[in-house]
Image (cartoon, rainbow, N blue to C red; front, top):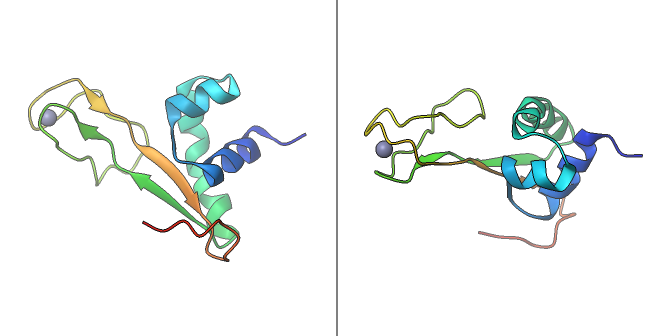
Length: 104
Ligand SMILES: [Zn+2]
């Protein structure tokens, strides 16, 4: 049996996912997904792979939350105070050529 973290890593290695997609795929809460993310970043880095995080951004004004230390999305935009925030998107990219030649 793969652990939840291994399942998250497997999903993120196949395609980019938001925490919502992961939570639905694995039957867990989004909050739980966000709690796993820092550990997953460590695990993935230790294997010599990279995790890409597209920062959360405000749907109203386009403000990007690039400097957030935590992966959780903010509840409100500091620039326009909008509450429609696009969540961060996660994707694991292997650096050992094990992927399928995915390039930007
Ligand atoms: Zn905004």
